[in-house]
Every structure is written in C-alpha cells, then in structure tokens.
Image (tube, helix red, strand yellow):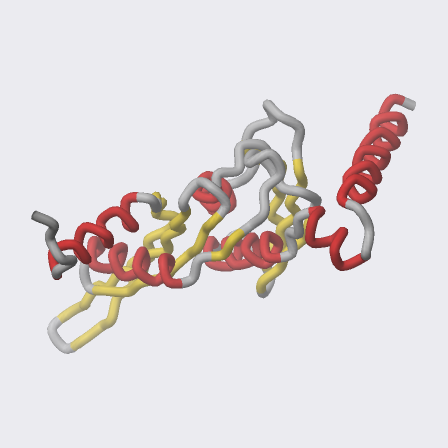
Length: 192
C-alpha cells in the first residue's frame, strides 16, 4: 500500500538536505557584558557551510552558549549559499581579487597537485567549496570576518568560460585556448 506524503516525510527530506552540506567553525568570539552582579558572557560564532561541489556560504550567530551560537551561524550560512564555477571540479577558472573593509585577498588558480595554500579563514572556505588546488594570499586585516567576506567577494567574481563566450559572441574554445596561450607565455617568461 502506497503512503501519501505526510509530515514525517518532510522531516526526512530536511535531514537529507542537511546531510549534503558540511560545516566548519572558523572563529568563536567571547564577549562580556558587565552587569550589577558581575559579568555576563556571550559567544559569537563564524561558520562556513558548503556541499564540497561548488556551493558555499558563511554565517554569523550570537548566543549565551557556544552550541547555540554555532547552530544559529550554521542556519544563517545555509540561507546564503553562493554557487562558484570550478574548473575540472578542483580549482578556480581564473585569478581574482576581493576586499571587504581592510581585508584584501588574492586568489590564484593552480595546477593539479598544488593543494590548498591559504591561511585559516580562507582555507575553511576553500575546503567547504570543494576546491583542491588554489594559491591564496590575505593582505591587510587578519580579522576572520573580514577575510571570509573578502574571499566571498573574490569568489563572486569567478566566471566560467561558457558564460564569457556567450557574452562576447565567441566560441568556448577561443576563450580557453587564449588562457592556455597566456599560461605558456608565463612559463617562458619564468624560464628566461
């Protein structure tokens, strides 16, 4: 006998949706409010969530207890996911720069086998995004909030060759072959 979809099925779908995402705690900040009886402590959490296949988001949550702050941050991150096009499902399509406040980042595509060469907050974003080869540098602010936001600013600038070719009325092969020519010239310049 076939069951009609009921309330229990919705819960199962939500569990399946939650299991496809991984999350990583980037930073916890403890803040104190001085009151008549002493100090009241609160916690702020910064969490990065991703599906390891090109979707990633970050969230911020505040609460009196650490687990509650992490839960709020994770929910916030799931609401604001960004899709980033990846080349060969392992690296970025092109180099990009991002900034937020005093935080600046430079992201560079890398050949296979390079690994994730990036600092703490940026490393968490790339791991949750599913990038395996990237070289990244953070300049300026070391505040994890600014670094993560600057990284997202740089990732939002990523475009895949198909979209660029459509916009320029060219073939994808023309765009990609130009990329190969430029990288070959860079190698020759490095050898000289």
